[in-house]
Length: 246
Image (cartoon, rainbow, N blue to C red):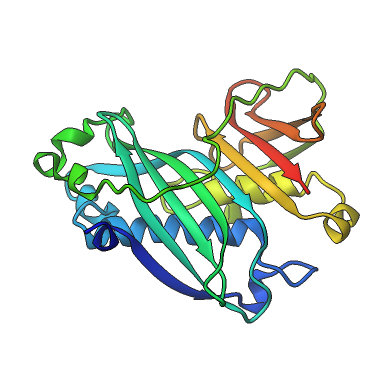
């Protein structure tokens, strides 16, 4: 029964989706994860198109990705996704990244909210379609830690940029994947030649828009991980991230 609750989606690591090492980039993987979430929800009647008809939409709140490997250029791979839990205001969705040999090489956890497009406030998920979203909750294991708390204390930004055309998505705000790409740009390219990302987390807090100045604060922790905070216009925090290399 649970197999019917899991969506499986096939991909190829295209040449323009890989980095200088030939492996899929974190930004592209993140985009694939979000697309799979959309495909899975749409196939079961609670996708964005259906929600938009009633002025609701899905927003991503938290994302944690843990990897043993990444698909290489031209390699086929698939992403499996399922709903782990449904609460009144949030739902937990998990993912597995499976390589061409059928081996699981990574997992991801995500937290989503359904919000009103008018008020931007969370809506009651258990009222959606009479609460039948809970019928898709699945017992499939996801053996990675849930997103952690991220705290940055540094007061000097590592970088600043202005949100431009290529940052903005159909909702009129900076795309969630663009934050991932900008955050990884904080690290020197030589680091990516010798190390790979083992775990990557995002916590989305507020929206930013075209013309906003985004400041990136980066802090190395005792365990070698990096905590990053992004603020807009020198004030409101829009997202936080944790990056761990192997």
